[in-house]
Image (cartoon, rainbow, N blue to C red; front, side, top):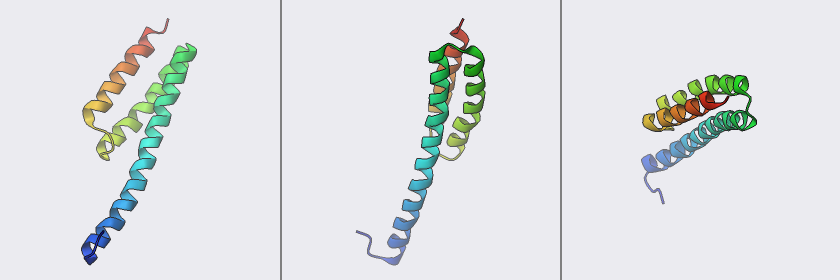
Length: 87
């Protein structure tokens, strides 16, 4: 348990950051899920549109430190290849 004033303050800050990061991660997952659903439905136009809107959201997660850069790149790469594969 935090005892010193500084450690109490840090605990409060961590709590706030955790909430913000949780919201960001959830938002990213929502965008990725929309791409997945468009791919599953087989609608190439919808999938491309969803992918274009998901990319900046994913990269914003990288700059904010919520997602690792390589993880975001890997997800984008795999999703874009799946979108291209739609006939």
